[in-house]
Length: 515
Image (tube, rainbow, N blue to C red):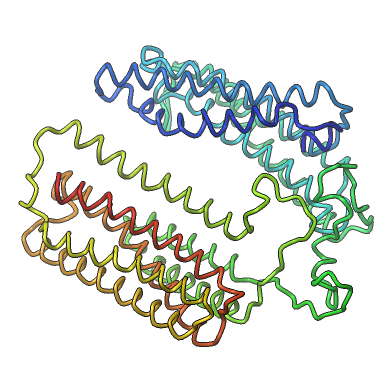
């Protein structure tokens, strides 16, 4: 948004990349304990996490200054997307400055658990994130609908939202003596006026979002057709590229040679149905204490299963296959196909997930000197057997990839089936091991040794189960002749996932069985 509407390249683009990759990402793993300053953690921990919390503000300072420099040196056009982008920067600065106070263990004693923290959190997560999202919606709306929204209505939406947001959250900084999560308070506390202002601001901010809905309707059903590049942007996605509706027009050439081949509609209800299923399942978990959670969870799981089955069934016939764009910018990974890049991005998220889980386990082990000795609870031979089974399955995946690259579909089917059987054997051994532990009275609630083991290996087991579902799909597609010497990328991408799951177990085995 900033480069397009400031009429110049993003200032310090390489610096932003370096600051994000070199500082923000690693430091993000080293700040979490600032939430625990007053829980009795050692002083050395408080000092370390105080320093890392202060340090992480520095790369964000660099990024924010780069954004401001982009605006300062450009020819600004104050359209609705830019207003929301600038608003997000302003709110992020306020949220960042107030976050520095919370980096101090001394000040944290005063502010922790009060509405000061509520204000800081929402200035970052609602102010910066939601205002950026709203700006992006307005920015991409002409591309999505081929129509222009109402600029006047969009600016009014920003003004009312910005005023309402600040009326809602800024007074909370002055409520630093008011505890969070209280239903009522004494009138003598002196908090009434500020809470009233915040309540009025909340109503204003909520009502303002109806203007967004109205503008979305105008964008979808409006009569003013959007030009191909309404922002006069130099970015390749606006360089004469057709709109989404045009891309879905029947008969549009897709192979680049001018032929008019059939272009099947690839709009699908599967993703939204999957989202609804996940939402229902999560809602069910939140309703467990009310006694109605399990039926809701069951409905959610049924919707999830139906969505995944339908999605896989559609993909068996390559309904969602879209060729890679030719001659378009693929920065910064110009030599990596988009789906492969997506898989690596997904695995990066998985690394973060397991880093958090294993990091928490190691933190617990470091703080608790007395822990069950190796071999007293978990059978080392069983763990070693499962390790060999899973590592062997990685070999069979490699052989499957080599087979299809050589054009041998029979060997591909054989090695995929072998991998499936080995994965199922791993889960069978793990289930038997769990059942044996349950029979000995070792459960999820058997102290930290029990909860850490079952949660960690359970998450890993879910990943193995997901891999088996993917393998079933690959086997079915292989039987339908869906892979060839020239078309085998999906098998390779699955291999990346399966190897990752195996590598995680290489860490889990020594942590839980040998140490």
